[in-house]
Image 1 (cartoon, rainbow, N blue to C red):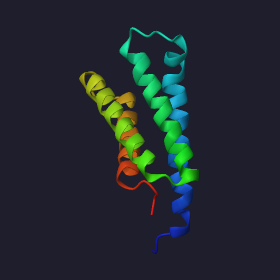
Image 2: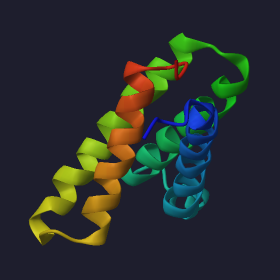
Image 3: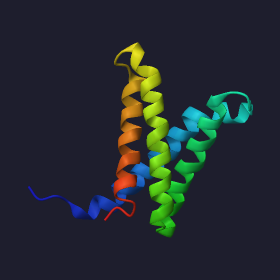
Length: 113
């Protein structure tokens, strides 16, 4: 069976949309508390900003911003994996691995070609 290459742009946009939806669901409440003396605020801020940049650069085709955003989101996801790995294999750990894999994809292939 041959791959359906026409679905590549759709899959890229689904990854971008999924990343933004995850950022909103996971980090927006932490960000709106605006607690400047906690590291969680800064992690939420960075994740929200850089996931939005990945979404916007899908329209603008700016590969440098996509690479930087993918790198930052990868670092945050690895940080989250390290913090949640003590609890064993659970949904949060698996989701952080998936987010890290999406971020690494945009780090390695910013324009999706």
